[in-house]
Length: 127
Image 1 (cartoon, rainbow, N blue to C red):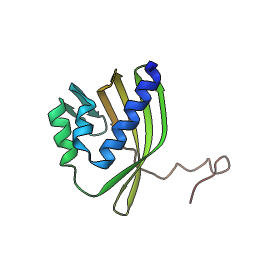
Image 2: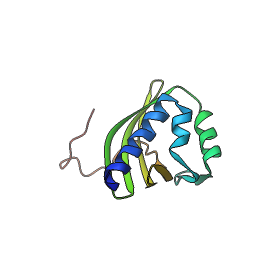
Image 3: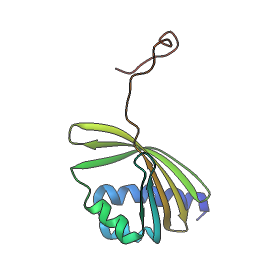
């Protein structure tokens, strides 16, 4: 399989197994020394076991739906809709993949905010 296609498949499978809570399959996708980072909180988790435990213990009833997935060589980026009960948000995830293994994951969880005044004449807004 071409590298880009393999990377795309690994990123998609990562979200699928996470969403299904198929911890065995999810763990099998992670490199032993996987690095997980959340720049907004400054948190970092190193290693498969710790990252697996982090996901297994994550609170709440959540679900993930990939909305866009782009891959190039050994890197991929995706956006996903995340629902937690009645709350919904968008997640942005960047991956570094080596063969069939995820080596690095960087998650961004942007929060919605009101745009600054003065550009209403240029934009449309979802309601």
